[in-house]
Length: 122
Image 1: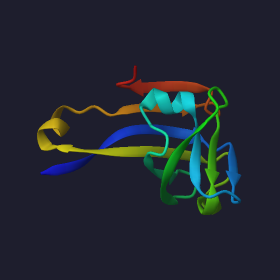
Image 2: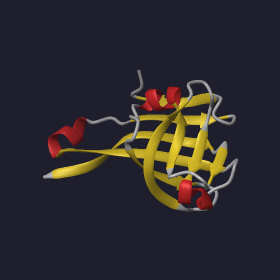
Image 3: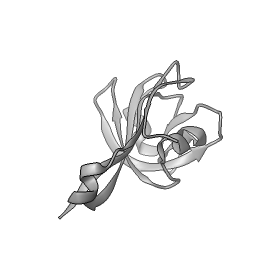
């Protein structure tokens, strides 16, 4: 059996930009991506804490240290600057692997300036 398990999560990431005129994706400060092990072009599920909207897209790197969380393309209609997001990626693994797996997560605050909690990060 193959299970789909949480791999990476950024919790309470603050949206810094929405841009409808873009092909689509979510731009994330590359430092934050590295913190939780997200790769460029990796498929992600995004939940908007403010509106309840959920959408799938892919992660692209924003400049390191920029604190950018930019909803782009059609998904930009699902959020506003200042909205809090949950950004998640998943991995497929066997049941045995899943039993010992610990996802890499970070909880953000202060408009992405502070990491207030991490799990299994380097």
